[in-house]
Image 1: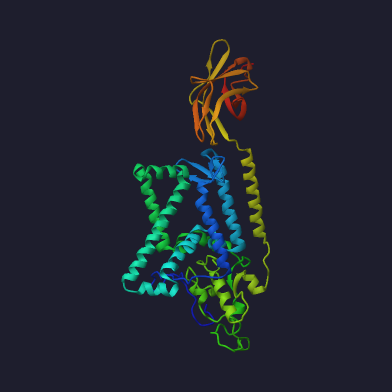
Image 2 (image 1 turned 180 degrees about the vertical axis):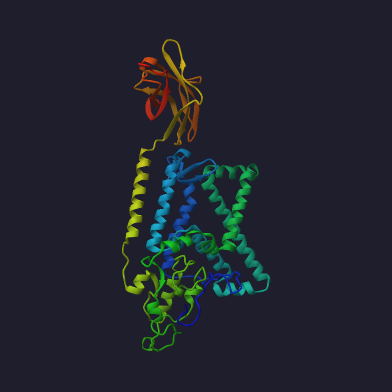
Length: 474
């Protein structure tokens, strides 16, 4: 398949040269309305990313993913290992949400919301533009001999990149271990916490490698979402698209000449200025159609609109559009596939909401002690031994815990110095208890009991256990 210019379409990724070596991308500094909107969105998201670990709701960190201790906070809701099903549903909602937007609007998540793109384009590249200059100056500097100017600029840029990478690693650590613990470690000094310092330095090196060298290769090679895009997109998906009908017309593209009637000559509106290619952060030519590397950053839209405006042609040669809109002039509408995703998303959100409303701040589990049967005591009393575990999901201590039986007359004796105890904040209490019931009240060899858990005489949780007794031969 060949382009109107008889130039072969590429059959490799855009960041490889003819020898298979990496072709370094020097994107032109973008400007335009979409870029300004992206800056606003990006800096809001960056502020949220840096602030979220330090925001507390009811004493819980707003977002925390403590994998080591298996504790997670999502929007201020604490999740423990016992709540793993809620975490799974939350992750499914996130996946369906991204899939829904990909089917409808292409890889818009990558260009507008993905932390990789935001950090690279709105932080590291902007610093690079400030120090090294725009596209042509960067290319010139790279080819330049190592003189005082180049050494100064390189050392300054690398130092700033390293500082920002270290800052990102600390924020990343705050999500993993908690902001309170991170601030405590900083206060006590790194020598007191070498076990944390070394992983921190490793993460700093990883972030520095990604943003200083690997860059767009993350989106092209490492990120699986780019591969999913090819599966999820269809002709009705809104993507950053080149209007080849208008751009090529009958005789293809042609350089711009003043006072030339392009329409009469059969040439399209594309003047082959290559500005859309120069501004692309992944080094592709959007005129070749929807491609794996395109992250929908809209830089080519802004650049093309600027060129069209300067030669008095209508904007929108490159724009958000679907293939069907360009080919058939069909406007966007909800397809059966989109409706299906929306239905699944609504159901999952409803299920998660219901489960969160039914979820208690305290989780109680009482289990029979393995290998133990019932025991006869004085009179006709039957005794069973159990272990209990109480998980406190709140940031407040739960005081004066007691157990009571519902419907059955009997006693519950906790093996401790006191029949009441406390559960620490975001902690758990474990122990052993005996349940004693008169044999006359039992209906057979296995009886289901409901145990009520009270704090200061307020019912906070219920749980059930099987109570064993002698088999009845009535």
